[in-house]
Length: 294
Length: 293
Ligand SMILES: Nc1ncnc2c1ncn2[C@@H]1O[C@H](COP(=O)(O)OP(=O)(O)OP(=O)(O)O)[C@@H](O)[C@H]1O
Ligand SMILES: [Mg+2]
Image 1: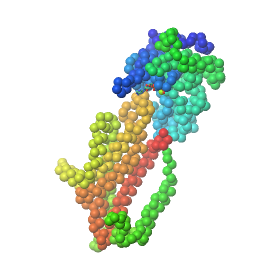
Image 2: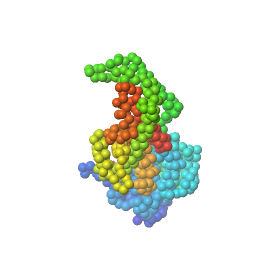
Image 3: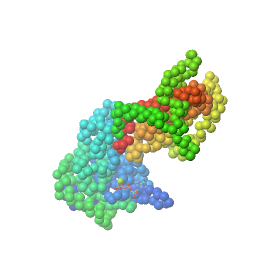
Image 4: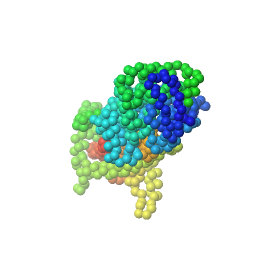
């Protein structure tokens, strides 16, 4: 029942070739969030509804961004998918399994806003950490780490410690670490939030390239509209209090391989950006769209 | 990581500090009033007589002479060194036991919230019991322990008291260290489905090193002081504590003599601190985060 995703404004985005999201069955979906709510119990009975009846699907290989004002529950949703938290109501399936099982099976890689590297481990050691924890042999670990370090362009820094790296480099290490076990799903919570604009754009280009190479599905939390539009197949706009999905915009600015610097100057890019901006700032249009945000 | 000055420079500065202290001692002895400085009936600075403040060279010379006038007596420095080593051994046992117990308690409290609530107040309370009250108790209980070939000996009581002082900073410091990792890092380990032991080994223990080292240093100092004081309270012979008390009686006729065991105990403290310093050196990889992160 979940596969039929109707886009917010069909035909308005020029390149939006309506790629039928495959997988009417939950088992074929990377992420399947069904009617999920998360209520944080506060003191003296006061409670915060961080998420109210949110449903969302992510197809394998699809890049989905979550965008919305601060406090609308983006991180909460991501943490629920990662099984770092459990929903008050509803169900979350990752590759057809309960989120908890998916976590135990290491089906996803995760990166947070802070790089979160262990300061006493080198770049290589940090990337090897998940492999080490899951019993991968030393030589295989070394080889995989070297591969990933190459991928994020830090070959000269393999033996450096995090305090010897810039913020952007640390973030790249964190991304490499999240890719260590070749997950088919990546969860990223504002991974470029702390970076300057230039580094950020470079990292975005790198992420697009990495995603093309690994064909992983991505759930990407961001505050930046251009970032969401540039990276995503779909942009999910959330609204706060209570957190729910206001609208879903299919962007589809070419396949991942074809996206490059030129896209940022593209007419379609600006169009999509202003669309997301309207969705973010304007009131949720009543009627059809509200229904759409299932 | 904070850049520490070069070892050579630190050594020079340290030596200068000691020389300065010696100069102050001799200067005060030379220039200070013979009756000391007395303010409102309270002696603020000591008398400068040869008995109260012997010259440094008197102390040094005395250390080279035999302990007593008896023919077969060993040199004073030798007696002090032997006593220091004896006390060092007891302190080391006390330190080791204390560190082990402290770490175990910290792990227990980290693992179980309930344990922290139940145990931590007792740990803090334990340090308010004065050593003097404790020593006879330990001695009496110890004397009742005996099974098979094992019997409780006095030095064990001293080591036990030393460990009693040493475990406290370790348990408190280690608990803080073990709970120090960011929520971020803990979440990450959870994402990796790492269990408590794996999280402990890969995250909590390495993260606690920065807290643990000062605690270990404090524990070492406590163990040494505890041993010295407990030796006196329990009446154990052979250690530096006993020597300090014994030689203090000789101050009148032999002013240089009481200083020898005092320097011996200072040496003891230095060795203990140096030992912990070596541990820190071995673990310095884990101290990178102290400034950076
Ligand atoms: N552990 C928690 N306990 C109580 N309330 C929480 C907790 N975590 C989040 N919340 C509440 O849930 C709501 C959503 O928080 P969340 O962190 O998901 O927002 P966000 O969209 O990620 O915001 P930002 O863009 O600022 O990161 C907020 O109102 C917050 O106060
Ligand atoms: Mg957030």
